[in-house]
Length: 205
Image (tube, rainbow, N blue to C red; front, side):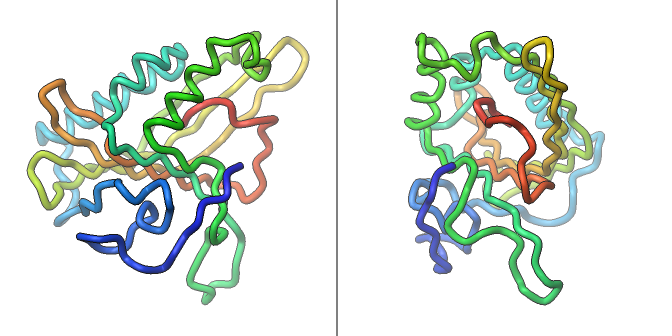
């Protein structure tokens, strides 16, 4: 678990986001959603939905090098620690704490470690299945970006003895159109558990 430094001040050039409160998120886009959800038949929604399904396949197959190619250079990948608070508290994440707080470099180092003899948490590799649902797509301030909400349920099984485990979460993604296709420019993962019951988080959601 990393310990990022969060602030309550908006990042330069845009409104406050989860990324703007993190040191590693300083380069992340502040692009925001505009208007209501796009219709399910809208070409942009269909493209975003297919992108998520294709990405889930790569994560299930643990094709992490190919997955890295789907990320922009200014990617911020954040999974705050959830906390249970009173209704009027005004927050439900732990200030300055995150399960993941990553940029492109740190994600690439995680992937590189999987290829070494020191990746004992994934040797033998887990069996993974990402289930996607509740996909909602929004236009953004710039036509080359889309904001995409989704729900994900990850099933993970390791070895032959321990029972499988689950992680349920909501995600907000920022997709960017590039000459190489759509890429992920920002992901915030809001896990539904305050206490993670998975043995470790040596995987991606």
